[in-house]
Amino acid sequence: MHRVRVRVVEDALDANNTIARANRADFDRHGVTVVNLMGAPGAGKTALLERLLEDPLPGVRIGVLEGDVEGSLDADRLAGLHVPVTQINTAAGFGGECHLDANMVRSALGTVPLDEIDMLLIENVGNLVCPAEFRVGEDARVMVTSVTEGEDKPLKYPLMFRACDLVMVNKVDLLPHLDIDLDLLLHRIDKVHPDVPTLVVSGRTGAGVDAVRDWLGQLHATRAGARV
Image (cartoon, rainbow, N blue to C red):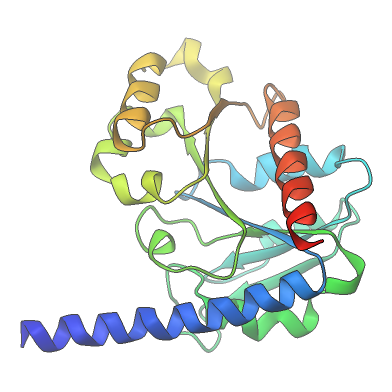
C-alpha cells in the first residue's frame, strides 16, 4: 500500500511538471518573466506587493495572479494600484487546495493579459508546505517569512526555504517589540539553504523594498537576455 501511494504521488508530480513546462513555454513566447511568491498566511506577501507596485520597475509592466482558497480581498487591494490582477480561488473547482499548482495557473492564463505585461507576480496561497512541491512554470521562486513567525521556521519547514531563489525577511519594523533574534533566523535560513540571497524588509515602512526591486529587475534582464 505504501508503494502504491508513492507511485500515485510521483505520477501527480510528473503530470504537474508537464503542465508547468507548457506554462513556461507560453510565458517565454510572450516574453514574460514569472515569479512565484510563497509564504505563510500573514507573512506580508500582499503588503510587499503593494509597496512594489506603488513604484514599479522602470519600463517593466507588471501583472499579478492572486491565489487564495476563497475571496478576493488581496486581489481587490492590488487592483487599486491599477495593475492587471487575476484571481484564482482554489475552492472553486479545485477542492480548496492549500497551494497553486501548474494546472490551476494554466486554467487562469486565458484571463491574464500576457501580451500587455513583462512580469507576472504569482502570489501563492499562504502555506509553508505544499506550494514548495508544485512548479507552476515560474522563472524564480521567492519566499516571504516574517520575524513574527519566530526563528524556528527554517528548521521546521526546510523544503520551503530550500525551494526558493530569494528569501525576504519581512516585518523587521516590529523587531523592537519582539523577543526575536534576527541573526539566528538568518543563520538558520543559511543553514537549510546555504548562500541563498536574503533581503531584510518591511512592507509597512518600505525598508529594503528598493533592493527587492533591484533583484526583480536583474532577474527580468537576465531572462530577457536568455530569450534573445
